[in-house]
Length: 583
Image 1: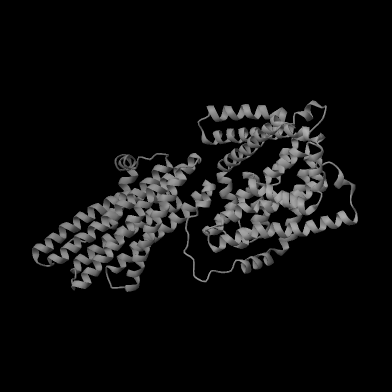
Image 2: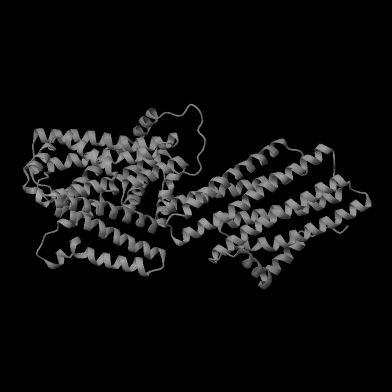
């Protein structure tokens, strides 16, 4: 093996790792909806969690990435530690699928149809289809499909390049002695762990082992301990991802480490006993690509069968090793680790935005209640909700901007845009709630009172605003187009009510029935209630526009007002419902 073979090996390894990375990312984007569906099926049931982990890892082709996702889920409160344990177990099995794909390179037959299964036969076809999809299709999903095919073709090309580069090593005594040294199980485990820790992918390190197996110098006795060590090495990624995370995320990363260390220790001991007592001839046979894939799968299945009944004990052990924090930790609503999986990150944004929306609506309702009577607890709640919506707007805005810069599907990109447009309106609704509260407190602080007729009018306007807030909240939370279509007619009624109430109060001022100070506060109340309705109109307009794949909210609202008989009917119904009693 000369310098040119070494350079070829480096190039093949680079292509292999690059192809695996590209394929995994494209699979992740292409399967965004499926990832959300799998996440939604997580339960306390062991089998469901196990299958979920297996499914997610099979989709994105990386147990390291899947485990980092799990750490992010636990850190964000999307998943409990108990659920995470079962998902991690499933991920260890799911990652073995890659080795089965790579084992196809070992097919050797004179049959034409069998040879068509060899990567060297079908990879060029996949690459051609992939480049056509990627270069000539405008649809994001088809482009991702093209990237999956190109990534797979690249990693298989890298695999063949590595195999060709190392084939000359079969006649090098030093190389044979190296793998004779790895017949020592402890050294084999260490070698597998170090290699996998460096490249941070057990799938990739198994692929490298399969490429070396082409030389015929890698026996099963050396390959099996190396495979065991690879499971420990892959834990490095999850441990690194837990740095700076909360206690729960650190526990999830520790679960991954302990699962692999305990499983490896038990089955390594069994392997050593088997070797000492029976010394099977199979262990001295050269390992094939298919044999390595089988060994990888069998080992991970055995580890899962061993640890699955002990998951409760594993949870207790982890909680002892990573104890509860003495001081309560600040809640981290959005975890940047989830950005590695944009569909899941977007789902988390939707959940946080929903909490924000409910908080803003609750603050408005509580502030309206404060208009009629003093309620210190409600006042405190309104201010807390407003502070929380400010916080949500800040973190959501920053997070969604980062998310929007990542490659996402067309539908996910539209959803991110919708959330960015809406969070400002919800934050302003909470601000208006505080303004209403402050007006009520100013009235009581100055000993001012409205007349009985003014209070009756204010109750009618406030009731209309409470209803429009509930309608816009329902429209957002449920993508309810019917609720959204009722917001704009009611907003027009509220605009008219505001003008009527302002005119009536001017008359009361002229008649001396109301003081000037009370008049200023009255004007502030009307303005804040009317502007709340405006923000509700923006929210509903956004829901309608996104349903029609359009971002021109104002044009959409003008169209609804001018061209819809349905709009006019709803407007008349709300006008009757919130008609003022004639003075």
